[in-house]
Length: 203
Length: 126
Image (cartoon, rainbow over all chains, first blue to last red; front, side, top):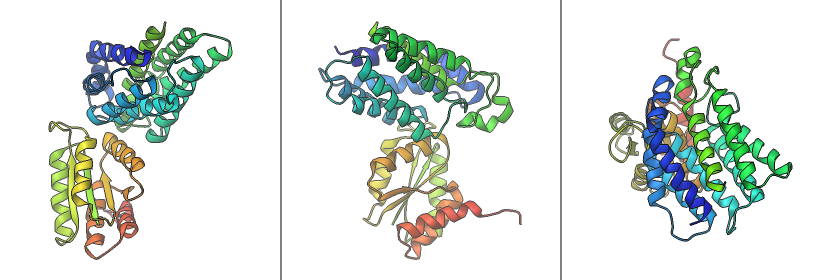
């Protein structure tokens, strides 16, 4: 089983285990469906996993399933992230730090293009952007794949925490204006969860 | 000319389609893609694909979307389409009505998108 497939399976388990927490976060400032939407999406992603395919193809297939089955905005966003990452990996058989850095950067670019969110808007970008930067920094510092992925997961978790005082400028939460402050962004929270799953998968 | 109404809610999509078809004088092809596959609130790219296929007569398709995942899904769909499917940057109801009216009077894809986008400027007071 490739690292990509192990990651999709681990991510699906973590999302299912944390669906209630993600949905509660979303109920505070959104429409209260993030956890369950993502659980449905990742269940579909696991079902769509091609057997014995290179990591890039695994991610593209999982991304397509997320787009189709998630239901909320996180479907197109995470779906795009995975598809772009998968395409960036191409036919690479083994993922190393350099390949994953390129894939993560492609995922971030896909998310920001589709969602038009910038850092500070209180979205998943607030976790993903610092995670990608931390991954690249760790790689430049000579870190191996596991160290880079841990740095990314740590940065994503800090980024998600840092969304708490922010006012939302994108998504359903932006309709709340000032009242969106004081809650963690559910998309940033799920991004942190997915990147922790990645770190644990490659460690 | 086809028009597809993309909404979180099947009920809302059906209502907007009903209104747009009336304004389209029976000439505009309008279909809805509302809610998730199982009828819940959300957006389904599969329902969107089906609606586009149903209205596409070769002259292009304009998408009107409500909020959040509907906008995101529509945007993603148009990225993968080859320019023949366009998301109008317009409010759902006013945009759909304006698009249907423009399509009914023989507007091409660019004209229908422009009509829908002009609907952003419709004021309700003054």
